[in-house]
Image 1: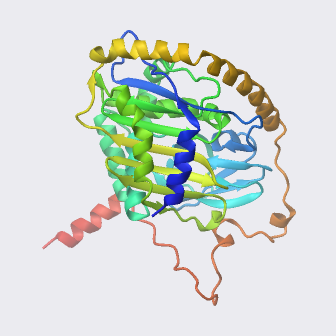
Image 2 (image 1 turned 180 degrees about the vertical axis):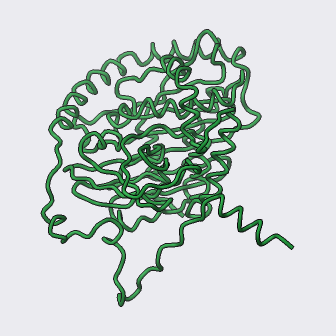
Image 3 (image 1 turned 90 degrees about the vertical axis):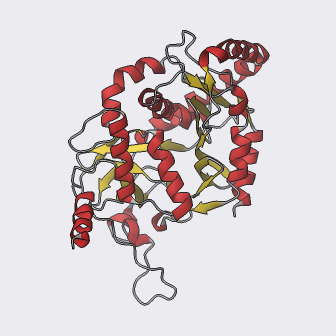
Length: 412
């Protein structure tokens, strides 16, 4: 049970404002409505944290370990990095997806939990990941559900999920590359994304896509802005792969966060020995809701959640007039709020950009002389220590070998 997580999410909910519905007024995309989430008040100081995608362009190294479920990160920057569960990791090796969100402090080496999302490509030991992109909600929700129920993800099930998504999207890939779906629909996703612009000070969004609600929130608006395109693309690809002419009404959207808070009271804590003490991620599942939340020092850093509302969506044509009225009414009622938030965030954003411009790798003499152990060894006890945890679980076989042995053992 995690009443502390529920209390944290309650505090967050009470300090936010749900924005107006944003949609395609022409009705060409009738199964998507996006609701921005704003902070009720904004602290004058920006965060001293950056996203993983930003960090990779500033000297941070992310390398393949040769193991399916683990990559190594070396952060030489004097600031913390957020590696979000919504990110796909790309480079000259097997593509991976973050299992859950993690914080990597400055000057730290660590191991990050990942899943393979490119079954047909081998791992390349020490190959670098050089970029990140969005992960579709179909896989994100599946991972979070497994984490909440089992405390870990099953790689063969992840591969099956990726294969099903590629099949539904009518997308072929020789290596069964999940990102191939984004490659196929990149033009369409880009043009659709212009309908849902980022708004100054925004910290998250609820995307209503057909009978589903997809929520992603960051603790600060700067991190949200740096990840906004990916937040949007993660949901829009679902709208394209699963087209329709219906969407959930605003009343259903307004109930999402309170229902999520109730479900979060029963959650599972994710364990990462090489990042112990740097934040805590908890996964939860129930009542059609699955999600995960990363918190640090009593503050929410990253929250993702999905709610299935099958049978509750309505034709967009029946909702359109109400959505237009709600949008107009919200803008009229919150004009002063929006103006003040925009001005406050503009000042903060400039300070944040100055902070990032000054970031540079710092040589750590402890690492150079071996005083800081690398990656997982920082937290793995040596032989003879009392109460040592069990060794890491074996990594799964590739799907091809898995199927081969199943077939072998089933033979009469």
